[in-house]
Image (cartoon, rainbow, N blue to C red; front, side):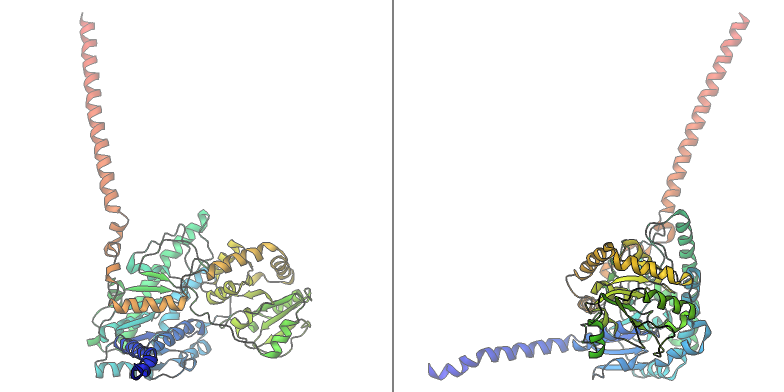
Length: 541
């Protein structure tokens, strides 16, 4: 018996080693080759894709990533990068790409549906990095198991499907699931209660709001289809004709291949509406564990008597663009709350003229780490979705100043559920700002509502990252999601809205009514004729 004792003692370790080996073998056996394309030159758009890439690499997948922020991801043996960082030059050199001014809902639709997409796509397609990547694919007959594409703009890259083996595709929206992205699935997007992304409407609209919402929806659809044609011309300019097998419209409307749509939205930041099974809302994917703050900043925030107000207009809109009048209005309003300390993201760290003692300026701040600090009581922001999601996660009340894009939609949601107040940028003055600060800071209703929605935002069976990776691997395992294909996607507008059935039923109804009318008319005429005959007979007698 003694001679078997060493093996018995080592048996747990031996079995563990076998289990680890089996896991590694299984992992490598199921590893896939994934192409991820993120063309938008904005870190708020890039960050979720960078985090998804890291998660997939940890699960032993090989990833080719086309990104505008290659410096933000660590090198990995299974990672291939295509550098698109030059795209940021568009913001500096092209006056059309000015995001420092307030845009109306009509300007939003026109800007983000047209020049924003095609100008950036043209620049990227023409660049040597992109051309080298495409030539490598063609020369080596490289194929991928899956393509993940940021789907809200730059659709010319969908044409790569035809030269990489036509794998399943996951469209990813770093904001809401834009109405036109759901077209291949025929997802219900009724403008009577589903606000268009670039409007400030809610799910309860007046007649005039429903009218403008419908008109903007139609204009958005028309501009999108027009832009799709322009994007098609862009890719035909830079990709040999023999590789252009299908038009972008055909690729986009191919429901079985355009297999999935993932958006980083949730019911907390948007309104309840029908969602097709192929559309999954994963929520705030970019949230990470907060890190300790700089000791000096930590001490400054800890010593705030009543708390801290954090002020940032995001990564695209610069605080310095607001103008001297609005800057002075904020300083005067902040000075009327000496019990609070104000942490202000300001691109010029020089001391402002008239800056009160309770205001601290910083060129850049780790926003999630700041919002996680228990002393932060209020977040003044522009209404960007990711900043909004961070505020809900950490339970920080809001004052929203929307500027462009989906910020009006996000901000109006905040105003409706009273987790904050919405201010119009063009109306900013000291008294307007002061009243908003006083209301949100002192009215307990806003604290109660934010606590409620903060708890809701965290109540999920799995994290957004786990959910994203699970669905990506689900699509990989089943080589698409054709089994979730709805018959609605194959119907024309006439069939989908039952216009032919309605026309048929109306025709039958009219025919029946006409027959009844004719029959009654004949009966009435016969009765009249009979009565006239009787009257004549009476007269003759």
